[in-house]
Length: 142
Image (cartoon, rainbow, N blue to C red; front, side, top):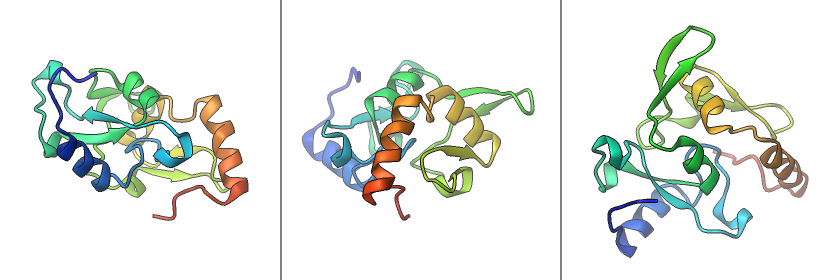
């Protein structure tokens, strides 16, 4: 939960830029029926500012799993790697969908650590994605 006040105008601007979906798992707000949260990419606890360049949309669970972390250990390289930054990086350069569209695969160390730390393939979300795929709502086309 943000300590700083985020105006309705700033919240709407960030939501529109994020296309009303989580910057990490790409879940669409309209599919969940619950509002997304405003994520501080660099957390306030690490001196992250409440301004456009440091804010993006995240679903509650991704935001909760991320917490105040900005990096994690990549098991494949045994190196500390920064988490994916949805404001500055392209999702498709770090992640891909499996052919069935229900699971996210990491293409880079950044992708791998983000999937692991944020639990992007948590069982409940994979089950939901399976239903969204059946309905033709998922995965996002861009």
